[in-house]
Image (tube, rainbow over the protein chains, first blue to last red):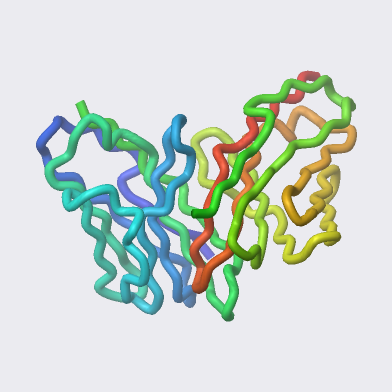
Length: 115
Length: 110
């Protein structure tokens, strides 16, 4: 298994531009998570899906952030417009839920820099 | 709101010098506590899950323990390859939502 795949690995953009991050979860996993990691705040959960349906988006910082999961093998996190304070590493993770918080497998992350 | 505090923020050890990392938590009802390892430029990698006070898990030089208020990750005779950031996370609610601590950055010097 290739594991969780994220693209791009690095993204540099200018303030005000739209940014789209992509994630392919591990086949067969029914939960998908988007996290943001910064030095100051650590790893923060932004949103998670179960069977392609958003379950909890309370971690999404503001309306500039949106996430979709059109099918079981693909998800996007979009920031529009981007701001310098959005600079962080964004991780996607997936798991197979059997009623508990099972092991989450993380992707390699997308390092975003907004100038 | 669940809170997870890890200490120390950074730890430097000589190879073979055993030590412990601490994870203190405040949750409404703990359902599980997780330890992850994160190498630079990579995503967190799962190490252990602990479900109840008194439980212990071991893997090579690592041993995780759990009480009602905190968890410890004991590192016995560490090697340079154990250098990484160790993250603790707690699960207290429904579904799969977990809350992470900010981690302890461990450096093992040869």
